[in-house]
Image (cartoon, rainbow, N blue to C red; front, top):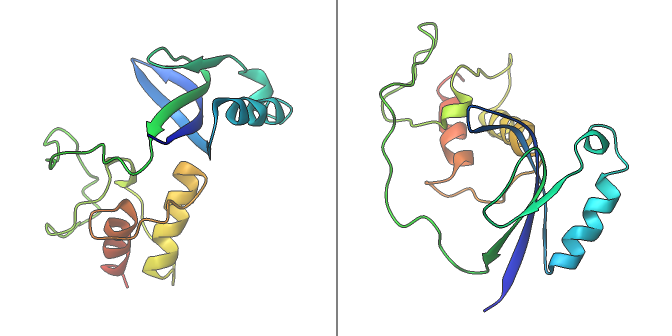
Length: 149
């Protein structure tokens, strides 16, 4: 099995919900992820929350998770929560299911759907995942953005 080490930074946790989680990188070894942390610790924001966590335990600070390369981790479908509401000023077509965290977001004036999707993903994760297929967040956001063009 080939492993990948996923480095993230959690800025805050309120009511067991991680807030402002930044995906910082994917590494071929734990030691390379730890080396990256040493560089991040020198940067503004990161130097204030420097604890490092691995495995099932985590808190505010850096978090290293290990995954198996070429392993699917989502093995079922999903449903949207009826408890999540969207502002009455935004009319999302029923056939478009956008990520919960993007509800309430609108494309900027004259912003193309692709640019809108990329902008939101970069703001949320710091990078684009490269996944653009029908089940991806990029695809959902692009469809949503296109409904405003």
